[in-house]
Image (cartoon, rainbow, N blue to C red):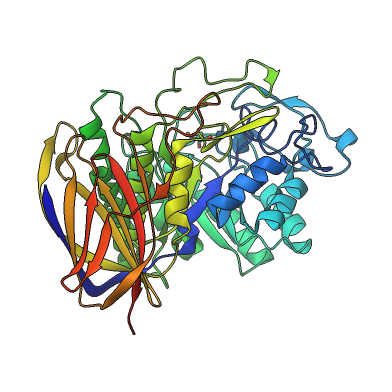
Length: 480
Ligand code: AHR
């Protein structure tokens, strides 16, 4: 197959580094036995897993959302601060895991400092009060933790959420909370809970009601999305990016509409604060800790096709760089995560490599592109181009992010641009002929990023050959 990618000089917007965020929730083995495990031979003096920290550093994450998720709607932050021996052990209401509270706000902030993450906190608007949220902010920001972004609850549109109420009632709660937070620290930004999935009945209605009530008190609206290949149809699954684009454009339209009608000082931006592939470990009944400590729940095993979809999410965020300003891969360790731990070992899953290939090329200006090439029809997402792509320009570096979604055919790609390309600075590929290929503790290197050499810079431009089922991230030197 042949295709051409034409890169225009027309900017879409600056790519916010915060789209390379992550998420740590008190759930299963994410915190305990994940980042914090004093019993592991690999733990530091403070109980933090040093191997996990080293791998997270490779992911080059910018901002991490904490402590939930559904967990936060039953969490009282005071339980997790002060001397460890005085912190209560409780059963968490969302996931029915035993919560020792040995890891709390201060431990999270220490981790943020170590990994150079900006912290992002979700407050409890399920069973908590606006005043409790304000006191958490005072605790954090007086201690110079400087938490810049605060989520006004989590998935409050969902009937499963502790304290779920109709949109108007949530909006009032969120309004009071945002006022208290911004009074205490005018520099903080707030994220209103938007729809938790496009399939919920109140999709977009919820978002409109909430944004109209919050007005200038909401800097962002949240989007969540978990996707999967339940039909075992790889070609269709890889086309899911069409519907991620659509979700972003739907929510953006609501933001623009409310901002215009309510004459807001600034339109709310999009905070995609939970996203990932998650379907294999979604059986109802297995999604709880059964009243035990650190149970392995929703430990999804990721394969090559999942990694291509993870890259597809990030490319969609880049294509909408003008409106998507924050995004958080959910989650980071053990729970639907790029990393899996055993007491004395760590596994990097396929999605670890996809995320890292893109995050290490963060920032810059996202440029408009046009693809002239073959496409295919899918059951679920209509017509899908074999080539998925995003392009950014950062100083004298042009970054190409490219996926060949064909299961069978290589794609010969010509890149056309007015920029004068000197040479290839670096290029990596993630690829396997089997879409279901996955890493395991026994066989950890089945799917991993490798140096990509099938790329040429010649007098007639840049050309490359993408094998079937492959992701390429390439950085090109631009002559100035
Ligand atoms: O990330 C797992 C869960 O998915 C989160 O707790 C919740 O917000 C979402 O439904």
